[in-house]
Image (cartoon, rainbow, N blue to C red; front, side, top):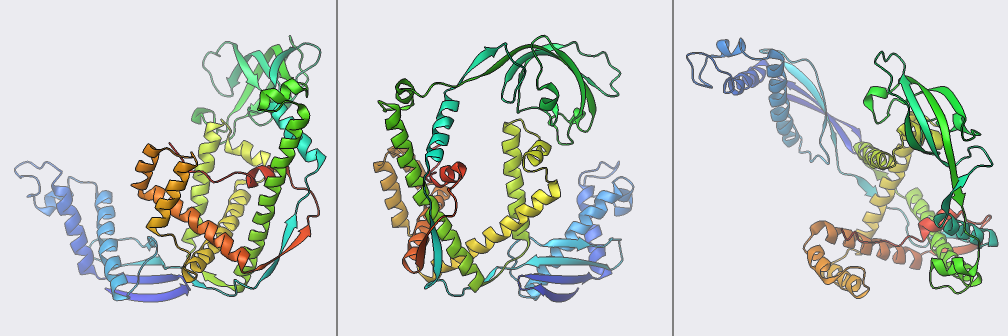
Length: 453
């Protein structure tokens, strides 16, 4: 076996591995011998038939695949030992065609451990925006509470609008389907959760109206048989129901919580928004610090980390979309009509920034001895119990759960990093140019929790 190593990036080595015909032949012999244990050849016990007879009773392509696996596994392990390499992830293998009793070559692209050279991470100066809570933001949050308390009422004096809930008889005929059409069925139609273009076709309809229109099912529709197919929809509207928002009265305030008046509820909302604004201000300042630290540092890591992060994000997104009965195409449309390629390129950029940030912060935590000890993790569990976040039985289970302990340890390290960076750098308070979005405030106000399931 011959091995040629090339350092293609600071964290990637490419090995060109050449295997001689003898090793290839041994791999094929091994594959045939293994297969012989599972075929019945008259006159021979399993595994005892000559190779020539086995060859006539097995799938040659499966044998080739198994021999390829043997050759690559054996030679790869020897190659990384010979080159004194410690892979950070599984290699990317680029094989050539393999044939019995002939030499074989392949490439192994090996990810190596990230390399971090920190620059200055103390003594920096960054802006810390101060957000002003406006009356408009208070009313937006109040309106969201009204939306939560809204009830459906039958509508008779207008046509279909966005957000309505309909009862209608609907028939769907797939293009090219020669079977007997399914008769119209009475069903509930919620605007905002249908095929792309569906809602636009029925806006303005009045009870008793009937419309026929054609749409194409997206390629990622949940029903595989409908993906990419055209369909004709015939919908006869029976009724329209719309949201009826409660009036802003003292009674409404009491229904929200321990508030005697609507003014008391407004005051509580403003106080909550003020607290969220402070948290958002800290988060922006922290991100500004991270940006400066990354500018000052040199961080290299294998690209496979980005691919893994993007794949994880897409898996989580797929689960969320499935639970909300939304196709990926509708998600893309809701996000500005971007393509799948544009979406995934954006995820890769986010993943790269996230990985570089996490690697830098991990290195800072090591250098500044900000790691969490077992005793400190146990003390945090005690705090969670005393705060009523988890009960004694959950604490007993969590203390013995390595994943839970790691979750707590990471939270402690994150808080220590935050405190360290804020104490050792200068944060210059500046008035924010515009008020924050309500979604930004809500996200900033979300407190970290431990999953009690």
